[in-house]
Length: 183
Image (cartoon, rainbow, N blue to C red; front, side, top):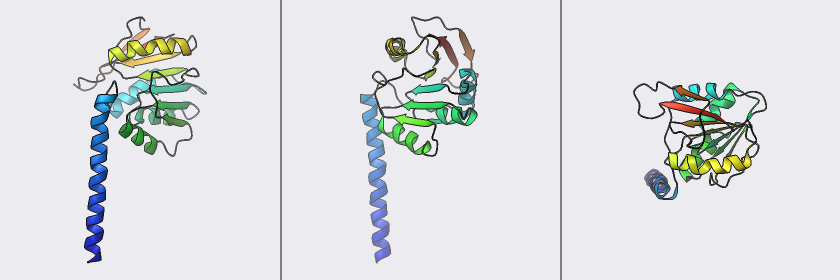
């Protein structure tokens, strides 16, 4: 009899967890400017390579999702500091969980328009064009000259990219190219 009670209790708990995650995703659709979109690992590797990170660099991923880009960057360049900023609850929890063993990665649950990024040497963003073009004003105010910015798929209207790199993302409509900028 007690085994059935345990099974029922676990089923109810997992059901509640599943419903909570689904509700947080639905709420995020209406309360965030950009949905969580997963990028393939092969594309992440190409992006990290094109960031041209060096020792003591500080990489920010604005809208970091599940933090896979940050993890790849830290694994490739162990002496960098990486900061992910995510406001949506479920991706934030994923990012916190996945980075729990990385001292060099900090995950913040903050609004990307209000987060402090003044120490960034590199910024990655995969955000809608309207968000990128609104966010660039905050980047200009806070970041030093020479800060490298990489935007996936969407250009920054007020800047000319120093490089445009085709990613050849195997027929996907996502992550086709990255635009590289320098402040």
